[in-house]
Length: 153
Image (cartoon, rainbow, N blue to C red; front, side):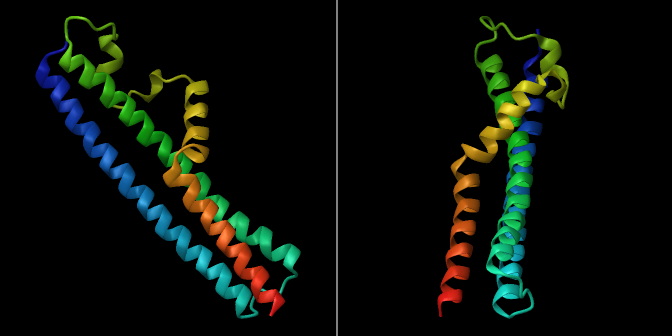
């Protein structure tokens, strides 16, 4: 059985890791807004004088790259949260747990997560986490509407 001190140490490490991945995701969003604005400025200033059929995919690809990158980062957050939940349950109910201690001792712990589950978490991170998909969907919609409105005037 694991000692409470080891579990508490791991929980502190995981909580710090969750905070760091969330901060990293905020940074990704800031860079996404910067790149999105740069594309819109290039389009509106005439520096990107491609046809509308080329401007829209450029905008979508620009936002899509950051969307993908944040989805990957969201996987790490979800894995850390899952691991924290396991450790919290182990700490609260040490008598009635069925967790393998070996998988809880490894700090990264991700090697015990099968690839199928990581892919499932990736799609959940990209398309089911509201803080991810709504943000990037809004960037794409606002960008497309802005470009279309600028073409009609």
